[in-house]
Length: 447
Ligand SMILES: Cc1cc2nc3c(=O)[nH]c(=O)nc-3n(C[C@H](O)[C@H](O)[C@H](O)COP(=O)(O)OP(=O)(O)OC[C@H]3O[C@@H](n4cnc5c(N)ncnc54)[C@H](O)[C@@H]3O)c2cc1C
Image (cartoon, rainbow, N blue to C red; front, side, top):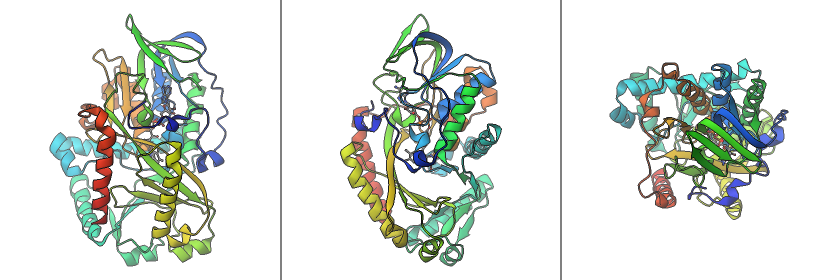
């Protein structure tokens, strides 16, 4: 278990009590645990978007013999409990710093890949008949301080100049006129790309597609030991042992560092939290000034993300908090309610029906990594989506399949995603790095 987390965050024996869990279509497939000693070409650890997208392509495109091992049930991790914002993201770097590190051409390639990844989610839903409540319309970033308005203007200029992207700037009056306003916002910038989804319906739909492609998904099969013998990997669960030539570690913020030596010290799990209100009436939406189902977030470093759900409820999320124990849940819920009340007084007065949280995953370089984890190229991962993995995990999982099948040209990955998964300096200090970063972010977010 990573040292930045707490064992309470790994209740694999029951699903998180989210709004998604309460409204999702049943999984409806057999996920019998691994039993006995079994062999395959590729073992996938983790049945979220990454692992399932990889398994699906390995089987359907390359005919490989694949099995998925999942500690709980498909979608138990972040994939079944996120905010459902399928949009451009997945890194925590400014574009100017990416250009400095990777060059202009590769930064452009990276941006194009992120955009393509969003389309991939819609394609997968269409191809496999997944009803994930897709709601098109793009996203909006809202200035939470007057000073952030200038930054949004600069962002629009950079996005147009570097990526040829036309973003729309909206003044306070325009926000009000469009039903996208609350008292603390000082303008916004809108991007057409992206749509919201029901994340658990999406991941369960992927699991059904994987099952239909004749790939066994073994639920309740937590890998507790990982050995290497004669060029094969032996993964032990409580029910059996899976022997595979290749392993995909698709565990993102839930990566078991104690089991896998390959990712040790390279990942920083961080909490993201969500509350959902009771269904709100149209009159309440209008009184608040927020009537659209557009995906929205503010300009804080520890950002808040929010959207109206199809039944009129308001979903309000926020990054932050470092106590992942069960005891830390209630204070975080209270904090989220207070924040909702400050930012959206009308919505904040309504009953909160759901609260849950989960781990997103950061890397030292603040970009994801897709590729091998060992020199022999038998252990692979796609990981560290920085809280924005619906699209990029779906895309990177498929890309991993291409890499394993020896077809890197089909994956066509930018170097931003493939250069390295660096170790954090003195990894045991990661909890302190996170706390320090949060202190700094909180200071910056007020100024
Ligand atoms: C609260 C929250 C809100 C978010 N909001 C958004 C959003 O709006 N938009 C967006 O794009 N992204 C969002 N994200 C991030 C996004 O959900 C993730 O980036 C993405 O789901 C990662 O997918 P994954 O398949 O790599 O990992 P996960 O979905 O986390 O799956 C990892 C799986 O590995 C399994 N596992 C762990 N250890 C073992 C083991 N030893 N043996 C077997 N299985 C194991 C776990 O049970 C888990 O199911 C959010 C995340 C959270 C937590």
